[in-house]
Image 1 (tube, helix red, strand yellow):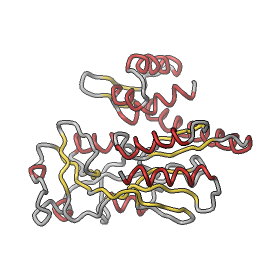
Image 2 (spheres, rainbow, N blue to C red):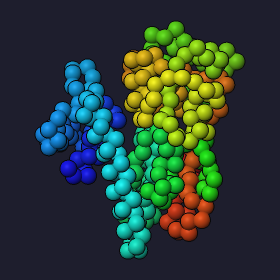
Image 3 (cartoon, helix red, strand yellow):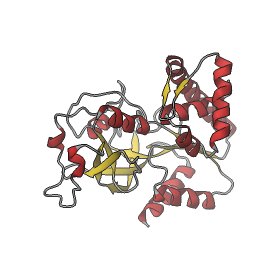
Image 4 (cartoon, rainbow, N blue to C red):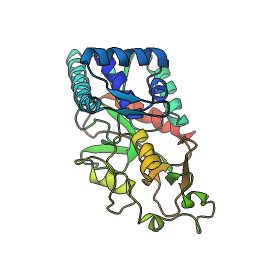
Length: 290
């Protein structure tokens, strides 16, 4: 199994949709489908149950997802260590957020323009690690959202976004538009609902924020699409930043009147002297000011 094919598999497994996975991977859908079919032939098992309306992981697919994530993390770590030993002009950027964010698009364009000879590597991460592998040494700098444990890290806020609740479109609360914050939807109105949870070991500050500051119960998720599917299938409450979140027609995003904003931040290790990181931080600050 090639690492590239495993990356394809993880994207499909997290999105549970071949079209969205292809968009995330910047490729067309037919070669992605062929790669997954070849992977299934290689392992001798179906990895996905496919129907006209949805894609789900099989038992074999769930096992491979855990193993693939571990293998890809290890491969990233090896690449980072080898690059450091070789002294290569490389920066690895961890990203957790909305790929349609215009601030991130401006940042990418400006950094490429300012550093044409630099090998820029991107690590797109799921929701279980808000530092995108920074503490584990998998990335040099992370473009992510706070809050999380900032011990030994330096964090710079780029923007603060209001937050809304993701509900099924037919939910009675979805009719509240929240334009008047005094009468908008409030967290207390969601106390009787199930909320999504992150796996054990996830940063408690991060978990608490996305649960509205109160311990909750609900299904465990790792990726944005898993959160949305939990809302769609189970009626689970999800939260999402307003402004750049694109939802299916069956879901609605209703502003919350009493939820603290979600901060877009750039974060790096406090003792890292890499000048490429400093340049990235300054470029990010300028890109998000526009």
